Image (cartoon, rainbow, N blue to C red; front, side, top):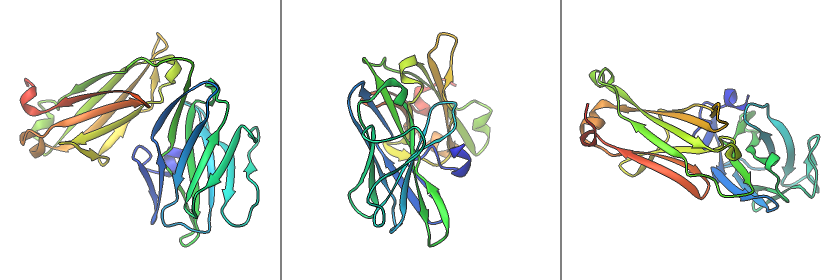
Length: 244
């Protein structure tokens, strides 16, 4: 699994050695029949290759294509992938894009970008872009944010829990969960579980943010945001808003 290759797979960037690969947007929702363009920045890596992989929830990564800035005049495709459905382009020696045309629901997946940093002889993966293809509007996710437990607050570090439910079957659980502290993005000490399908076919996701107990005592505002592209829901919590 790709997650075993990068410990920061839930963050906005993925770091292996000195290589930082960035992908955007983190999640995009597109109607059937339309086109999606996913961006990848290779950071400081130059004269290298950009490879793209598709991973459906619960599945293994599939090699889609690769594109090299200098040497190849055409895209090289993996088995089952071809033009004009899948195409790739570059805006610079470090900026690449994957374009998927005439989208179908089976195109819903996480798409990862990978490159090789030849200076350290290591491969680096991006964190992935979640693509959701739907034939209609998605229901707004339900978000519940739980404060640290009383036992947690007896130690120097405590954990906030963000529970997301009501993720429709059409979404395939491909929601993006992000955290903020006093309006600033937080990516460290975040752990988010894979989406779990429920008996009613909807999905739920649990995300955890470990904080300093002192920050909780300072009454900082913590926010959990769950996004399905343009559809999102968020909740805030702080010490003075809780009755412990």
